[in-house]
Length: 371
Image (cartoon, rainbow, N blue to C red; front, side):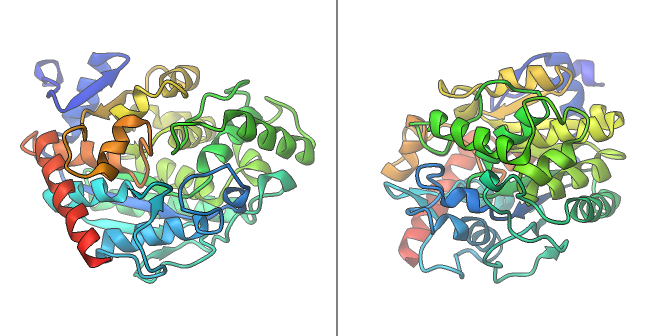
């Protein structure tokens, strides 16, 4: 009975604890699967927009390299682990820890990569996104949305729940653009992989994209696919389809931060019936971020969607790169929050934040030794 369910210390809740308890009780001890849609948007190459890579050009390698790390244990498309400036490691290290501890299967979707990952993946026919400043950023939106829906529907057949996540540099800027095109946001509340969130730059880029598309804030409130086509990225179309396809029948964790909020908003506009099967899963780092407002964004989208976050803490790590997470770097990505929540849930709480932290330390040490 969900009324008897106790939320473990490893997890935190924003909003209704009753709603969150009911949602968690339905996936507790159940079989889950993890998916990550990797893609590219040339928006990430605008200097200063994204720190998900040591240079703007390297941001195009971030998604495929993260996917390769998850399945292969190391990057194949580049000669180093995806890092932020300052040698801060990809959040895929935490995702790896959650997947290895829980033994959840992991499926990669190529949602439009400029550089294709060198591992097995689902292909939905997506191509990389253009800069949103063109006002025409995503091709064949409806096609890749429908293919995402087919994929989500079929993954739901063999699992009690799934996690949908992403790795795409520049994705918080495209998320802001879609949320503004839909009228969910009129101001910049999205996050950044940097502690110095370049909010002014992102807002200027978004405004330029909206102007190029010939639309104003809120013009596409009822047409999220058109918003994605004009100023979004291909991952959004694929994952919106997957969410609708899966959440028709099973609980679905949207693993990520403000990028996933945009997808939830789009999917709910397209199919409101899925509301009861959506969980938004993220990290304490994002919820506590002073320069973004994931809670406020979700309040604007739908207060009935439970926002659940993992309470993992890296402050005692022996590695400076991991400790940097406690200083506002990264915060979420590659489904690290959603996969951690799934690992805790599928193990009925046997996997906790201490176990995840220790595993991350080991994974990071091994990766450092490889490179």
